[in-house]
Structure formats: structure tokens, C-alpha cells
Amino acid sequence: MLSARKAATVWLFLAFELVLTAQIPLLSHVPVSFYPGVENDLGQWDLDQAPAVNATGHLVFETANSLLQHWANTRYRIGHTIVPGTIPVGTLLYHGAITGPHLPTSLDWVAVEPEHSLIFCRGPIETGCWHLTLAVTQPMKVLYFDGNSAAKLPEGTMDTQDLVAWSEMKPEWVNNEEQRIMDLCKWGEKYGVNGFVRMQMNFEVMICDFTSHMEVVSFLNLESTRIEIGPGKDLPDDLDTGLERWDHRVGGISSGDIERVRDRLAQALVRPPVTTSGIDWKTVLRVVVDRYASRLEMMQSVFDQAQQVQRRLRTVLLPYTVFAARPSNTNTGNATNSWAEPVFRECATSHTASIVAHGTTLTPSEHLLLQAVRETTHEICRVVTKMWASGLIVGVDPFYPPEQRPRADRIHTLMGEWKEDVTRLISWLDWSVWVKCRPACGIEEMCYLPTWPVGFFPTPSHEDDASPFQDSASLWPDPKKGEWKRPQPKCIRRLEPYGF
Image 1 (cartoon, rainbow, N blue to C red):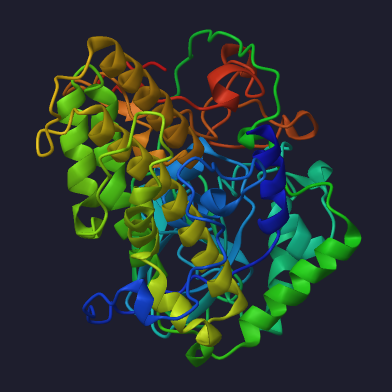
Image 2: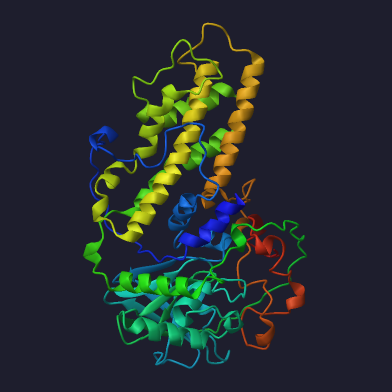
């Protein structure tokens, strides 16, 4: 899988639009046969043919499905995707003022939740601080950088911003936020971009002009924020030295690739919205995850019960089990199960056949998303159909009992194959929905992923910068090692005494 993760950096350089449209009424399903030539380019419907080791569709799928989601982007901090978007009218934004009750006259930041902005609401304890609430008055064009893109770390969290602002990576400028926002806004001015969305501990927007697209809702004099951060405990080092998805970054691409990305991004920003297909891609992706995530997870927990697994496989495939798909009497456990290929094909194409049939109306970015869905559902359905067909042949399907009771050794072998198939599929999909605390946290706890900035070393050249987050670096583990580099979920206390 390492080569697949290396290949991920190829497609991730491309900027694609986040298409958020109203869900259109569902049409009755039309069989694939109604669309001549549709879905025939994904290879043969061979149940034993796994995806290529350098396949990237599943990575595009999960990245697109994780946009603007805190948990997923905390897990994979290094972002690769640049997404034009719009902040809708009525959205509230928040700003903690330092200089007093004055609307910022220069480029500055706003938060999407008041608790986040209150951290920056600073002033003398005697006089308090000033907290500004703004409302968006007209659609605001923004650019979104995925990943933990506001984390000031030199390991690649800001690569995509460097690409847009400076056409090269400048890790030595990781803390030069003033220059960064200035150059991003200068670049975006010709495209009408008024903000850049990033994720810190929560989402923030770098605003280019506070007098445009917004109005003041309130400007309140509040008690100054006081932050107390306690020491953490030592964490074990990570002994894995292999190159994985966590380690891939945009830095290092050629100057020609950088220019192609910037040109593609410029085309996306000037293209009228009506040129998109109107497909609600967010829902398309979500439907696939909702349909399969919990069922695959359930199968992992019942591998000691062959009939329970077979029932769940049959339930998943029931809408696609065409009547003609039946094994012949001559099938054996060593057969290729080619009789099940129509089920595989119907399952794999069910979410995309009608979209493919109208592919000429899609933008280049939508073609990328479509191919991601197709590759992802293709592999899910291949594995699930293969497992179901094997179970039916062995004789563990209660709806199709065999003439003779299956031998225990055959069932044992089958369950071993099933476990390997599902484990490999879940690892390949790598959906963040499966990243959770096990066992579940108690009522006084919360499930937590190590999150920047709490617990990270300050950049050596800026150790003296005033920040409400920085305390003695010696109290915290090195963010380049252990679970801080590869965040893993764990339960932490929500009540005192706190600890990581």
C-alpha cells in the first residue's frame, strides 16, 4: 500500500470545487443496461482482481468526504486539497479584538465559533476585552485549505498555502502569518476572494476586507480570557519508520506542477457556478459511507459466527441480487464464482451509472470525484460479493442450505478468508468514521486526538513570540514522534484534574 500512498500526491495537487447544491428529487433506479457502454472501463468484473497498488480513487473519496470535518483533518494534519467555496448569507463570524472596540482596518482572522475567538480576546483584567460578532450579508467567496492548515508546523501543514501565495514552499516562514495573509489576499483580489478558510483547533477564516460582505452584529466588552495549561505526560515513541499517508506533503513538487495547480485554481475561481452539474456530491459521498461503514464494522465483530456474517452480506447485496445470479450444481469451493459477477456489477454501479451516462455535463473536478466514487464502490462491492458467493458455495447461507452439512474445516477456512478480506478492505478505505475510542469513553471523558497547538513545540526561531498557547516546551512530547505525529484516539478527562 505504500506505493498507493505515494501516488496520492499526484491527484491531490489539483484544486477542485466543493459543489454544495440542494438535494434533487431521487429518480427511480435504472439498470445499467439502460445506459449502453456505461461503466465498462473499470476492468473486468473479476471477483479476484484487487485494485492496483497505486490506485488513488479511495484516497480522493475519503479526502472529499472529510472536507470541513474536524476529526478527520486532525487525524491527517497535512492537507493536499484546495477548495473554492462560498460562505452563505447569515453566517455568524467572531473576532477577539486586542486593540479595543474598533473594527479591524487591516487583514485579520475570524472564527466560526465564539469560544475559539475568545482565546484572542485579550486586555487588562481591570478593563476586560472586546469581542466582535459579524454576520455575512452577501455570499462571500473563499478558498479552503484542508488538513490542519492553521497549524504552524514545518512538516507540511501549510504547503498548499505556500503554493498559492508564493509559488514555492517556505517552511522557514511557517510563523510569518502577516506576510502569508497579505500575499494570499493580494493573489485572491483579482478573483474576488475575500477569505481563506483553515482549521486550527477549530475552523477560522482569514478575512481580506472587514468592510465587505459583513456587518457588525455586536461589539461586547467582556471579561478578559484567562488560559491555564497544565503539563502533559511522557508518551511512547513511534517505532514505525515506513513512509505512510501521514508523511506525504505537497512540498517537493516541480515548479511546472505548481503553475498547473495555480492555473487550474484560477479557472475554477472565474468559472460561473452554473457550469457545474448540480449534483450534490457531498450527499453522494455520504450515502456510500453511511451504507457500508457500520455494516463492515459489524462483520468484523462476528467472524466467529459464519451464518451471521452471511446474513449481513446477503442484506447488503439484496438490492443487487438479480434473479439469474445463481450458482450451478457443478460449482465447487474452488470455482471462480463467475456466476456472481452480475451482482458485483449492479452493486458497484448503483451509485454512479446515471451520473456516468451524463458525464459530458461534468466539470474536470466533478470527473475526479466521480472516478473516486466509482473506484471506491467497485472495490467494496468486489469484496462483499466475493465473500457472499463463497459463503453460499460452502453452504453457510441459511436461505440456500446444502444437501450435506458443510465440514467444519471448510467453514474455518472460509471465516479466515473473510476476516482477511474485510480487514484489508477497511484498511484500504481508511475512513475516519472508524477512528474512535475503544472502549467508549465514560461520561466524564471525551474521545480526543492530539490537536495543535496544545502540546507542540514552538518554532525555534519564534520561541519568544507571545501566544496564549505556549508554555514550557520541555513539558511536552516531541510532535514529530509517537501519537503526536500519528494521532490515535484516546479518552481524556473533561473535568479536573485534566491530563493528556
